[in-house]
Amino acid sequence: MPQPTAIDGIRACVFDAYGTLFDVHSAVGKYRQRLGDLADPVSLLWRTKQLEYTWLRSLMGHHADFWQVTRDALDFAFDMHHLKDPELRKDLIDAYLHLDCYPEVPEALSTLKARGFKIAILSNGTPAMLEAAVTNSGLGGLIEQNFSVEEVGIFKPDPRVYQLAVDGLDVTSGEIVFQSSNAWDASGASAFGFKVAWINRFDQSAERLPGRPDAEIRNLMELPPLLT
Image (cartoon, rainbow, N blue to C red; front, side):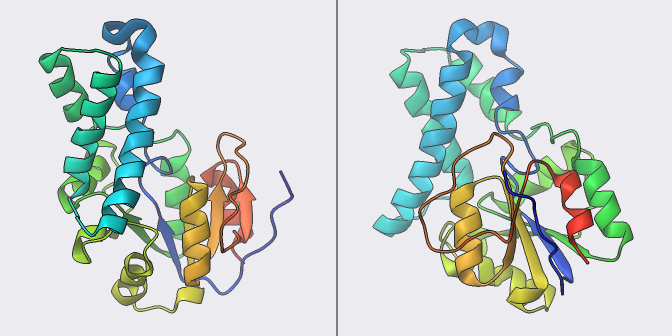
């Protein structure tokens, strides 16, 4: 991983939610014993199809909110692994409203907030999903605003989604540093005009897409020192 460089001129720190602040695999993690050897395969397929459905629905022009997409993706994963357990399905869906945040998140957000940066989420999640995730993870006092794609009716990386943060925070795109653990989202935000820190938690390869992150870091505690 290259040494990250400083990012200047920032007034607002905007974060992707799922996979960046919140561990999407913690939902299955809560019921690992009930899934046994299928826990990791189900969790991975659930997340993969969840993202695929957002892209495909956007291309098809048939929007459904992220709550519906999340349920549809889980149903696909259950079908693929021949799981027929309505009670477990219900528990997993409910767990998605109580995802764990990554361990460093509270301290990182507190540090940024103390330095006077505006703090917001920009996510595919519905307003209700984001409110539940923020409240249930104890981040309510740190996040100032949640921006949901439901305001424009299309998923990331459509530029209309990133524009929500510009309009809502009353700053220019270049005054926003956007954080995502999803390399495709980091590329989309960079192509839009944000400065971007890619949170490469799992040592992934860079995407071959328009837009390049300004910094590549391993976790959110590496972000505050970069902002000058």
